[in-house]
Length: 179
Image (cartoon, rainbow, N blue to C red; front, top):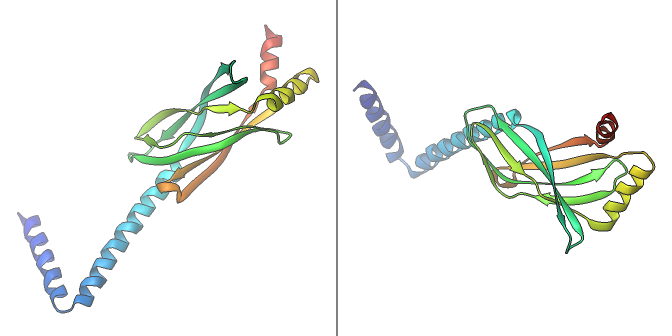
């Protein structure tokens, strides 16, 4: 009951204040909208600082008709705070330590609620040149380190979060030699 009376007096106080001049109404409205935008911006910044990303697994698809293959890392995005984060896009590329570009990817919009979400990233590997650089590295016993450069775009692309994950393919050789 007391809350309703306070809100009633506050509302009519603002109306009386704004009744004097339309410029005052614009000032009050501008301050209110500005305060809301600052609040949402700080909330989005806090969410962006707390996002954690890791790779859970990697799959491979072969396309015999197109003579290329698709590498599909499974990226887990963890949101530890109790806010829903709308990611407008996740995009990037896969390169080796020599700078050879293996392929690009783009996922589209993703909604991350509190907790985690699994996002599959389809990277279509650029045919022959990628295959030759991998085979050259394997035959010369220099397994390449692959780097997944990615950007997570928040708020319609206004806030980009850039990062990278490095895969040491030499670990595959160690695992093969172990068995």
